Amino acid sequence: MSDQPAVLVLEDGRRFTGTAYGARGETVGEAVFCTGMTGYQETLTDPSYHRQVVVMTAPHIGNTGVNTADMESKRIWVSGYVVRDPAIRPSNWRSQGDLGQALTEQGVVGISGVDTRAITRHLRDRGAMRAGIFSGDSLSRATPGELLRRVTDAPRMAGSALAAEVSTPQPYVVPAVGERRLTVAALDLGIKGMTPALLAARGVEVHVLPSRSTFADIQALAPDGVFFSNGPGDPATADTEVELLGQVLAHRVPFFGICFGNQLLGRALGLGTFKLPFGHRGINQPVLDRETGKVEVTSHNHGFAVAWPDETPTDQPADTAYGQVRVSHVALNDDVVEGLACLDVPAFSVQYHPEAAAGPHDAEYLFDRFADLMVAHQDSTAQQGGADAQA
Image (tube, rainbow, N blue to C red; front, top):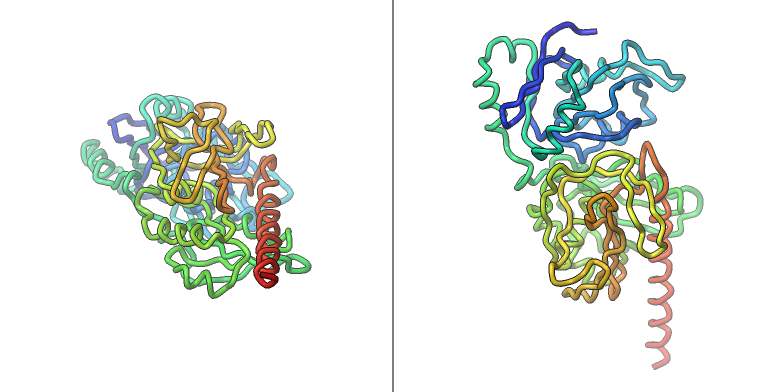
């Protein structure tokens, strides 16, 4: 274990002193807390956490080590990592390495030995804010005032366009498992590996496309549906992606979006988005599915949300340029919109992560719902074609 000093400096001047964990140096980003008791590796490798300093509320981190199977992307994306008690050594039959060593190898600056409960309470009361972790020469050669200035000079998450920074540079294909039933064009805004895997398990061939792809790129694939993934940054900056989604809706191509994709569907429909005080992050968030009346325990990572029109109750549909839309899911902790369902075009979305690696799996049915939507659209199109031919 390290005994080198490190310090966490928050934007409002609050400081927490601990020991270095992972790489030594300095990093800045938006400080957020994650309430997951397990699944730290999936959190670290989720591109949605790009440019965020993640504070883990669970006290013991690293007990199960790291392994290649639980990687949601090819690298760790968090800007910094804050834990209370890192494991002295991993102890799990699936472990292939030590978490601290993995952080060091990938240059992720962290801090341990701090009161993560106090940090979480501070962020809960004051809101997510910029933060920096400093150790080694970055700490010893700077005054407290200089460290705070480095934090406050960092860009805010609001107004940041980050999807292109995490998206795949080249298209790739995840083949269907077994017989190919359907084809989906998936726009990678920060996609997690489990998402195309769960689609593929349902007989869907998934073409993962860069975030700057055009509607012509999508049309060239003749897909049965279009998917927009999770991802980092402010949805208010994603004008190009929103314009693309508008074309998808106008051509009535079945659409499913999660997380960032949910926010972009809201924007394409003419709804606004806003930044939450401290966001939803973890694998224990309760959400009501209004179609079934069931409460699901779900996995979240979002700092922004869809703004429902003030004049329309959330249990009533709203009018948009593409017909009516209703709130399909709602967060039970704070009534945030957690899902949208279009009534006049084949499109829906949810704000949380139904792929839910490392769990829970309450919402995995949404991938079946998307497959059913595509099949129903195929049948409707075939029937309409037959009717036109008879006419």
